[in-house]
Image 1 (tube, rainbow, N blue to C red):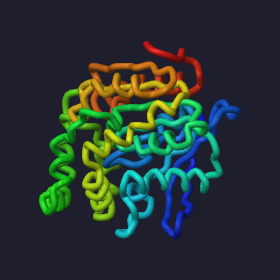
Image 2: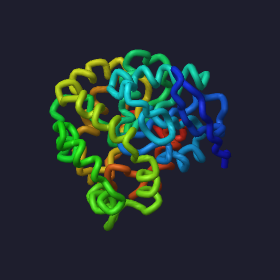
Image 3: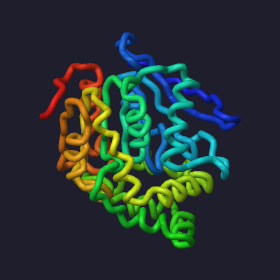
Image 4: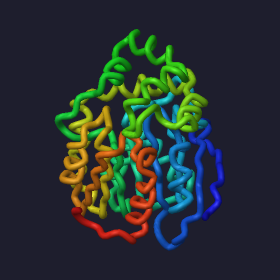
Length: 280
């Protein structure tokens, strides 16, 4: 099992934190794990232990920079990914995107030759027909969003998280602790800016370049996700330009590996080529 190490660098004077682990197969491109909202690279240690790779905290999250004048938009995160890969000295990747880690798809659409394999898990849909879930709709409203997000407590998060997983009860205590450890004003500001600059029409338009991504892809979906309906798993697989396999998990929620730890093996087998490509 490869050891996980922690790193801190800087982009334009702002700290960038990431975790890394050596890959069992050093000949392949490293895996780039991109987390969503409201988490950080704390999502990925179990995956890194299986596949190696890199897992940064996106700007505004975790231990990375949160300065108020930073660009916490879809476009800003696409630029961050480019700059981060320069900082890490990485040219090609195997990409794993969860939730708002979908911003990695924006970068991949522009530079598809740099992506060897792709895993999409319960990702924000860059597809037509999506409507923001009720928490996002609150965050997108001026004043209401500030009040709602600023009033978040660990107890409140624990209560709300009951809907996010298929296993009865709230999300695991360690997960809740990791979120609350970094859920400061900077992260709250980043979340509000990201959602407020991302109307559904913009999401749909952003996905126009998905057919340019022609590498083998795996779409893994916790179908009990209250935020993103399961139909978008099939829509993602259909929109991508290469062979795409879809795995639906009726007994998993928004963070599918928390309900189904075997998801880690499923993802790792695909990334290493141990699983077949193409439609299920």
